[in-house]
Image (tube, rainbow, N blue to C red; front, side, top):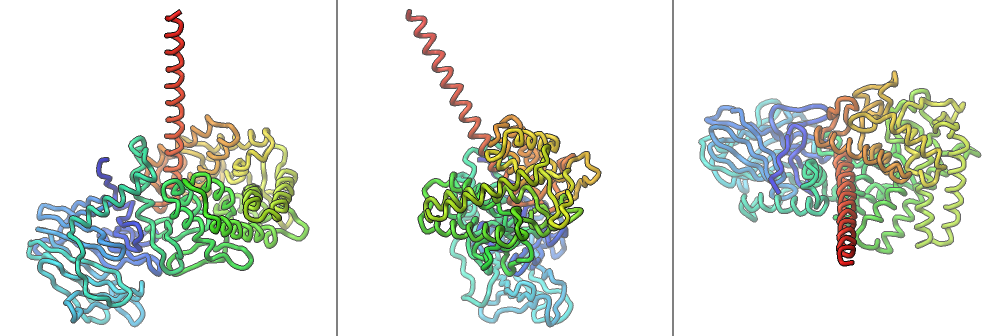
Length: 590
């Protein structure tokens, strides 16, 4: 396969397992001219800037980013960075030097970075208030100087290497305390080769057909590089939404990443599915999000987990161990009881969202008039979750299966009798039953439960999806709506999860041509505009965070399914041709 190169302005350089990245993106919609080492422990914090120098003077360079290395080049020479391990970046150069500068800009009793020279080995050590970690820069070859060691308050703090134009090499480590001085375990070239091999193995597993789809290699890299090892509140290996500022695991985003990993990386997929359940509380509620140093419970996310588990399990290459199956059943049961016991009014059948954030569609027009809303997508997701709980109960808790099935039928009946108006599904406020706007794609999501809905209802939902379809995919708000906003988050832009849900619902309802169209448009969008958090529905421009893992996962899911369909079709054509040839030979023989 040809070497993958990617734009560092959009996709950070990192490796699987690391909480570090190397990027120009320093925070929410904040980028720098210089590339920085960024830590995602205790938040997102730029630590050191990389300034190429020649003869002690800053020079402009061209950067080339690939999964295994990041290279700066100019007429004077070049230097290259590679991850030696999850906590260590090695940098090697010749001709071109490097000034590593403290990114904090100053030191106070509570903020900034203190720089000193370690007496044990002469390494430069920076201690960061922002991350609570140390950063040790060890000289492995070449000339090395430290500026501002032990300086307090304002002033320059930096390390210069290779200022004389000779060959040089350093190691930059993120540390909790003071282990033994750094000693390289392998050569720089071996480090680069190891990262290349690791990524190639990952990409071969998750997208063996990637030569057929031009965005697949980059999508695989976005996932691989955003994966972190267990640390802090992240209790299992997990895929962050991004190693830009969206460096969390949200409690529905994680499902899409788990799903695409299932067939090739089953252990990672199951960990990815369960990681948010490790923070489930006594009521059964899941957190809104988790990251290294934070767990938020002020909102929840929609209960897509039952449907997603059934899809994930179907893709796993081997049976789920009995203890894992039981854990999933208990977790899903508690999560479902949360909605049935704590999110329904007295005597009411339908559960409610307390805010748009609970739905995952934070500012959808469904929530413009009221925030505490009974929404049809919520009921449909719970119907599917109850169906899956009943199937799981048949295996691990047979006495409970009937109860789950009864709950599912009651909820399905309420969805149809209370939120279907004869033409479309509507959302309504809990207090006063005021009907919400119907111009959002959110009200079409019950299509995912099409096998549980009357055929005419599924047909109307498919028509609604078609009305939202632009050249690039399904807009989250009707483009003709006065409420449409091109960069309005869930008020117009195209998103990966809504695309996956409606495509799966269309296919389940038998609308294969429309499902193929949705898949094709979204895949072409990603190949054109990358794996942004969302996209302008009319221009296709990538918006917000530009290296978002659930977008990459959605692309890989749709591309993989398209390859499977092509293979099935090709096999059918081959078989038909073989039969025709046999018939022709038989006719000639007679």
